[in-house]
Length: 267
Image (cartoon, rainbow, N blue to C red; front, side, top):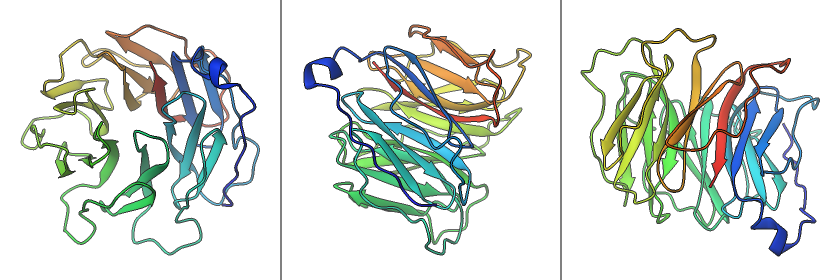
């Protein structure tokens, strides 16, 4: 997959008026914008070497990155392309992306816990050479940019750099596997989401609700945190569930070519 770069023509003043909403990303590279977050482009309709697996927003809400399982990166709006692993042999597929707080870099994480740092993102460690009981499914950046957490599908949490270890779900009887992790704004806690809509809070993450135990039309595929607390869950059908944050819309009623695989939030 070849990475594409688009340059935003939105003024700096306008950028900060578009500061609340969600973007959803589908595995074919389609992007759906809700709230006041503009649509800056997508890879939908573009032949991809590998499916898209994640999305991350720039801090000024004026752009986003998509990442595919081969590590290829697409940049839209004011998101800059800093590099990728597209075309490089990987031991395991890439499963997620997290941006640095200033928007001038990002980390990619692979299923074996390997971490790839680009731009001003620093490498703080990985589990790439460690035997894991279950694959890594997501990554969340520490708010200060000096660390990150990785979550495995069994609820194992791996903390690096300034990101503190606040607990994990290892040993917890989970009905379904973990699909994502999101940090609190303080960096002293995180939420862990499972495919059945369950949400587990660690550290200073507040328990504001979940869909665990309810019948869902589609399994959850991601979680995104709000700036002031709370979070959104997104399902493979594009359904969005909000807890302690506003509801901006969903793609649940839209005809999707491929399932939604992740969400990026602003505000």
